[in-house]
Image (cartoon, rainbow, N blue to C red; front, side, top):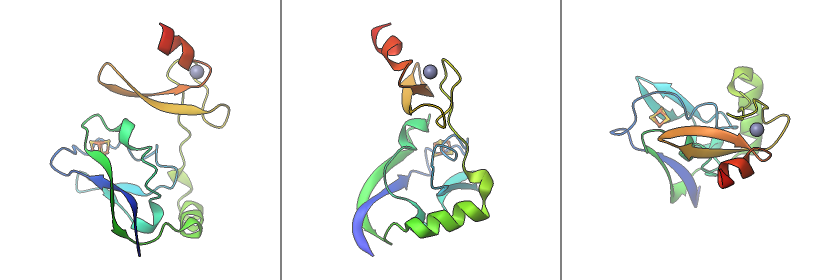
Length: 125
Ligand code: SF4
Ligand SMILES: [Zn+2]
């Protein structure tokens, strides 16, 4: 255990849409009984990539006592659940994160992913 950053899920706001599941490269989030849950806190590195994916504003990152992030537990988890890794796709050009770096973004109330090549057009219009 250590004091560190970890995702916080507001169950009141969460509608169980599942948009936060695949953006988490560690596969730490699952949907249970219609709500997002952290499967195992050791899988969450607190990087917060899920935050921008949530259309409800239900995700944030907090600092508290939590089990240490465990890289080997993540590897094992992904090996046993190969479907957990879903490459995110740029909304504009369709390339995925295996081909180019993509960033989470919000646009007109929607969570989108944009690649670094398409980002300048988004910034400058
Ligand atoms: S994206 Fe937000 S609303 Fe959808 S399941 Fe995840 S926490 Fe819940
Ligand atoms: Zn693109």
